[in-house]
Length: 162
Image (tube, rainbow, N blue to C red):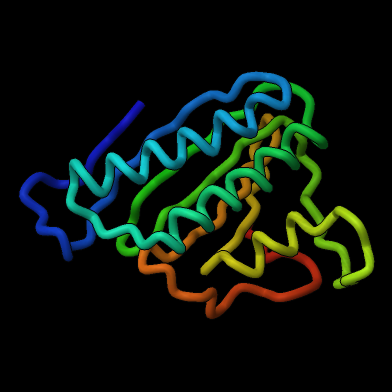
């Protein structure tokens, strides 16, 4: 499902466009999700004339990979990934079947693994978790201009809503 904002919006005007895709089971869903994100951002650049920096392209793939990996690891059942362009950001949302809120571990540069949520929170402009009747959704917003995250928490619990 894909939707686009108002017709006639210029390249610098705020617009909303997005896509939602169910992800397959298994580890291939992680690579599939990264490819879908690149394809979406490339189409946004080409078809809608929206500027997407190389940094934003890379960070979006990183965030998609980390969120989908966590969903595969901790939430049995179906997943849905949504990508949405709003104003000057891409919102990456992963819906999964687990109602447990993710918890970022305390910073530990010597720990091997378990840094995914820390990474997402460090690079995202905004991060939040919404509990839903059948699970949860996790959304991270990344600046299309590739600006470093200004207000993302660096450690501790993720920002959540609801």
